[in-house]
Image 1 (cartoon, rainbow over the protein chains, first blue to last red):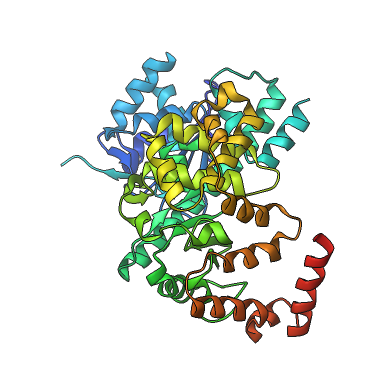
Image 2: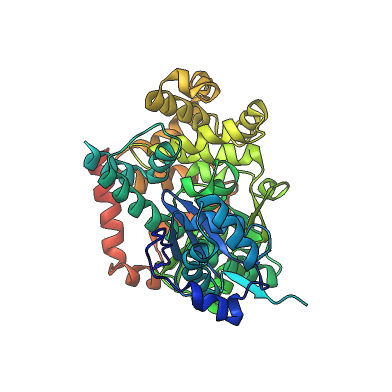
Length: 117
Length: 333
C-alpha cells in the first residue's frame, strides 16, 4: 500500500511553486477520477486503486476531501480555490498542500488530466 | 480492553463494523487506539480493492465465454446491503456459476487467468453434478466458483437454475455486475448463518440483519422459497442463532424464523451438519436427497473411491481414505 499523505502543515515548504510551472498540473488542466478506479473510505482518509497500479494509494485526511471534490471533473485552479476556501489558507499554500496528492494520483493512474481546448 | 476487542473483531470478521461504529460516533477511542484500528481497517480495505480488481478480471473472462455469474457474499454484500462498502471485509472472491457451465468456468479461470486448483475434484464431473464449489487461486487471490450455497444435503435441494432468474445490479469500478435477487440473498445469508462456521460468526449474523434492513426483501416469499427447497430447517436455525447472538429485540423478523415448524426429515438432515463427524455424515445424508439410482451410485462411488489425483493431492492412499472415514464415523457415532 502506497502512502500518498496530504500535508496540512502551512509551514511545509511543499512544491506549490513547481505545480505552477508543471504543465501536467497547470491551472487550466482539468482533472477527474479515472473510469475504472476502485476506492474505499477509510477512518482517516481514502484508499484508491487504479486499474494499472500495482498497489493501492492511501491518502490521509484531509486528502480525502480532495478525492470527494474530484467526484466531478474540475480544473486545478478550481481545486486550489476551493481548498483555499475550505481551509482558509492562501492560494499558494493551497497549491502546496494539494500538489503531492494530485501528483501521486496522476502517477498511479487514479485520475486523468486533460488540458483545456 | 481495546486490544481484545480488536482481536475479537478480526476473528469475527467485523473490523469494518467497528470502524463504522467509530465513524458514526457510536464508539470513541483514544488516539493510539484509533490509529491502530485505522491501520487494520485500511489493510482490510486495500485487500478488498485487490479482490475487486480480480473480480472484474474474472467476470470479464467468464463473460467472454458467455458464462453468466452472480457475485456472492462479501463483495456483493459490501455494495448492496452495507451503508458503505468500506464497512464490509472479505477474504476471497465468491461467484455463483450455472451448473451447466461449471467445468467451463473453472477451465476459464484456471487456463486463461493462470489459476491453480489446489484441491482437485473427487472424481471427474463430481463438482459439476454434486459439488458446492471449486477453489481456483489466481495471483494469490482465492476465487471460489460456487455451484450451490453449501456442501451436503441442503446444498443439493436448492433450485439452482432459479438463482439466475433474477438479480440485483451493483457497480464496481464503473462496471455493472449482478448479485442474487433480494430473496435469494436473504436465503443465502440464512444458509451461511445456519450451516457456516460453528459457532456462528458475528459477520454472518450482521449480513443477514442488514439484508433485511436494507434490501427490498419479501421475507414471506423468501421463506416460501426455502420451504420449496426443503430448507425450512435452515431458516429456522438461522432465526434461532440470530436470536441467541443479538437477542429477539434486535433480531426482529429474522428472529421470528425460529418458530418455523420443521419437517422431521429436514431435522434429520440438519443433524448431519452438527455432528463432530460432519465431514463424513454430510456426504452420507446427501445420498438421501439425490434423485435417481444412477446419480446416487456416481455420488457413492466418488466418496468411496476418489480419483488418484484427488488422493495424491492429500497424500492419501485409497485405503487411508476409507479407514479415515470409518474411524471418524465410529468415533463420533
